[in-house]
Image (cartoon, rainbow, N blue to C red; front, top):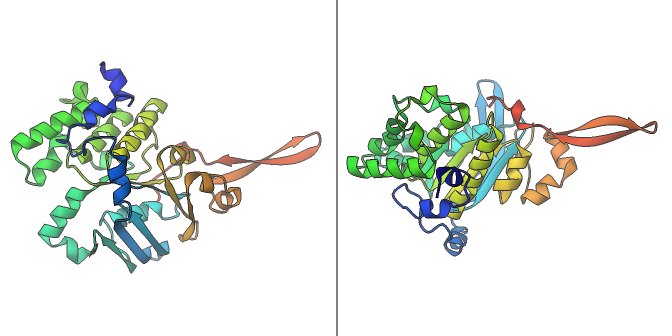
Length: 308
């Protein structure tokens, strides 16, 4: 099998049978994943957050279940990235609470070395801007950093690095400095550095922002494969096309920073009034036979920016 076919996702199955990279085997374990979906791994209750005097999130309550593919959908500034960072313990609610795996996720809890190590191994965050999480001299060292930092033996870390490089097709980049790579290549390396730790939960912040169509397709297919392998996937995005491909449940955050709606992708994407109210689509007028018509258009992903 050549690497180009592996890169585009069709035969990921053989690669994902390897457990060394933290990806549970086998890929086709749908009954096991379905059986876990009653397990609540994140619980947010009345969560709010303020950046100084600016409200970013207001009175948000939700549950996230093990093995589900959840999309946090919202326009720029709605608070979706803020919520994602709170689920990763990077920031903490200014009101309300978040529990993770049955324990309150707080600044005090993460000061406990045991809790912090366990949480960081179970939850991985892939940032919108890959440059914020890439710092090592080479791709190989970047991928090895997480496992070694968590105390995994050098031999086991090397095995994880090799398997992750193979899964993501990074062999030709393994000795190059990450800062010399293209945007799509950096995204793959950032994802590889997270996967090598073996997390149960993957948080993606605007994963397709700035990517070329080939890398977008690669990433969307990979997310679906990871979910099939048992991972819980939470994605913050305003890319309606991505939501249709990767999500099974969608939560919309409105421009008032509150929950505006929830449903399946087909229910949410078919609700024109909800999408208009959340500023995720807008009507473009045109005239036909002297009559003005309006058609909805989505906010395309190339308008993404770090705003939250």
